[in-house]
Length: 164
Image (cartoon, rainbow, N blue to C red; front, side, top):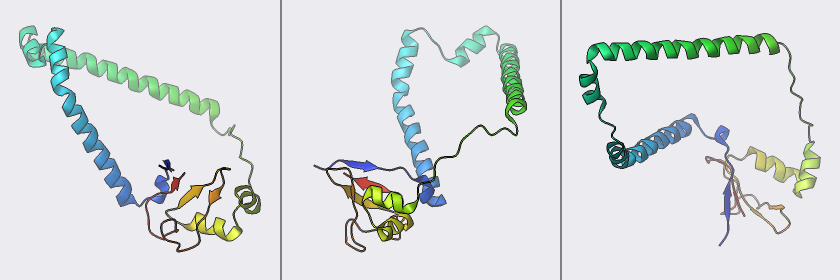
């Protein structure tokens, strides 16, 4: 059986495809979390953790809630001030100073020679939205001919894929 490797290329997706993927992911995580609730409730019960409503009513009701919310607000303001001060210090330290170095530019002919493809194949691979190729035993891509069926380079698609 062949091993399939997917190359993540979200910039090749449309906004609708990215939004749909994000929504589906969030819904699946919510369902997954919901499935853990009975086990979490059992663990909390066995450790003596009670429902917040019961604790708040026994601990003083609304006044205890106000006190808890006050200290929560103090902690939140502390975090916000700390992050803001840290950001301003970093802005002062690094503003206007680009310490990053540029990567060496690789010419197209050198890249085509390295991968063992023609310049036409390289241009075709770059312009395709979805590419399906196979890798030979030496690690070189086997680029299919245009409109060759399964491994062709269609104009429509959602991501780059590589089959090995």
